[in-house]
Structures are given as C-alpha cells and as structure tokens.
Image (cartoon, helix red, strand yellow):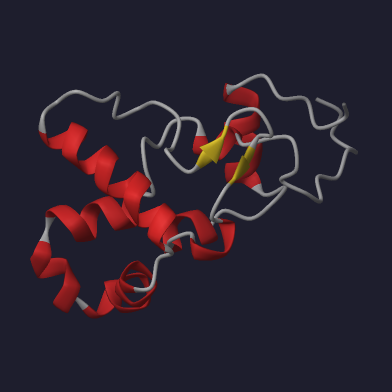
Length: 120
C-alpha cells in the first residue's frame, strides 16, 4: 500500500462490513433490552426505532437465524451489497459503523485484512 495514497471514499470497498454479520449496535439492542435504557445507546436506539422497513426486515431475519445459531456471525453484514460493495442503509448505520472514518487507521486495517488496495 502506497503511504501517500489518500482514501476519500467507501465506494467499491465494504471491507469494514465484511466481518460484522449485522450492524453490531442494533444486534446488541435487539438481544439485550436493558441497553435500550442505557444512555450510551440513546442515539442508536432512536435510529433503531426508525429503521426503514426493509432494513428492519433484513436485521430481523438475521437475528432469527442468529438465535438459532444458523448464521455466520462473522460473515458479511446483512446490509452490505456485496456486488456494489457498499452499505444499503448507510444513512441508518449505528454508532460503531459511524465511528469508522474513511482513510483512518481502522479503515486501513480492514482494507489490509481483505486485500483492498486503496490505490486501485
């Protein structure tokens, strides 16, 4: 990886979504109801309650399979469009996804893990 390459977009990447299973904060909120009263989850709980129907449906299907141990918990996020390599519900992503900044250290770790060269 060229150290001078600046990453400015998530377009065509999706590396950070390839090992999540589903949006992590929403999984936590769905499986642990006491988190809904935790102030540190307040923003995510608000977003969680206002998810579009199709985003909620994908999450609910994942959670059902999760509870039955019938899903790869370390597989691609159910919101990742694997053909286009982007989040289908980017504007509704939870805090843990929002905290990852394009081109920062975490971004570069995921890109390296999945062999995505930012200079391509």
